[in-house]
Length: 558
Image 1: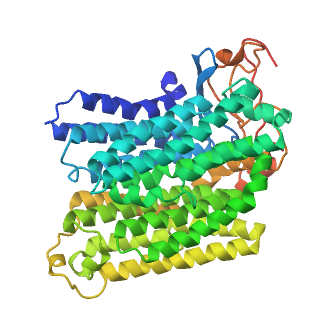
Image 2 (image 1 turned 90 degrees about the vertical axis):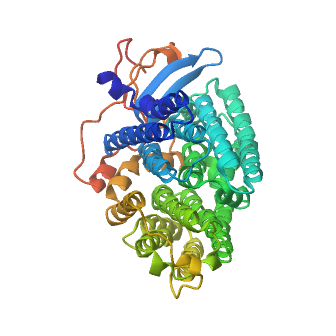
Image 3 (image 1 turned 180 degrees about the vertical axis):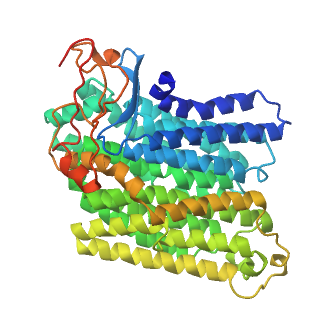
């Protein structure tokens, strides 16, 4: 049991892969067994991710559940994992969405069922690995691993233009990956390590990089992450990928893969290159605001339901990037919360659009009208998820957008005003879409005989709605766990520096001198003191959330 607790991240990463391995040994004709194996493995992964997030200490700064083992001796590459309030939340999101993707594909995927679920489960392994990795090479490996399953999911099980969309997706992403990998190699050349902890520590203790070098490295990482978001003007691959992907692919693409871009900005760009981040912040904020308004305007004129939701993602992710680069606590917490909220709401919208496509085999809005008459239960679910996506108070979308706008207001009133315009436009295109598709008289006879939600569909959609309501009514458990992560990034960007090794990782074995990463042991320190309130927690923190709490080791003290 102790071993399981100490390797919970490894278990979360390997569980989907184990499911894919089992599916690989099943015959192609055993479709029901294949589906059940995929569902059980994804549910177990969700259970592990939920336990992981529940055990994440909100009063403990820095990384938790740390695992570190030597992987490659020369150059020194380690199997180094750890999570905080940021990565733990995204692992939870991944674990939550994957069982829904399996269920929504239960009857929708009828050809090459075995291969479909193998790729889907392998994709989950890659996504969790990205969020848990603290070694740059390990991060890059998982980053590339998750590209291949998504490429095949779009290219094999997509719609008419699936090959074009799949190739475009992988070319854009790999172009960004090449830039990021060049940046990783350069960081190794100046620090002698791929370990994110040590690199941040090195940069914090002494100015290793010249201003011009820091700018170029920031751009190498930022462009890779901006393509993944995607931030305007790198967004053109996204609508094609969304429209052509199967329903499960669209849910994962919008729910998780896009968040890897904003996660990378928070985890790598800001802590590693704080001066360049401050320098480029006004330009990035301008691009984010353009994306918010542009995405809303283009979504407004889309005749295709799925493409409308795809362009809404460009607008919503613009809010996330805006919140990150206003460089204050409210904005960053709002961005992180919006990342989670968008994954749930937009994932729900793609599920709903996919279910509607299975009934009518069209996504054109003009083909619908009056669906609330023939599909009353389905229409109710669609309305709730639509309202959450546009940011209605008491639903999940409101919290993140409110915090982002508040943080933007503290930075500059113009930013907040323009972001608020995006909120208004979101209400316009989403409510107008709902009016045309679901309200009024039935104008197409094909819509009169449509079947309402089945028991399985009610279960899937009820799960999504419950999470939407819970996050909108009581966001505190999520916000409280991200406090220390945001404080750590803010302290680095504001130039406070760190004296110990970065990102607040508390690991055993740090007292061993000259032994390197191979002597580091697993574990995370426990502060043992829990303040009575969030305000007290902030007041009681050490001045630098990045600093380590030293723990004596068997090999000697520091």
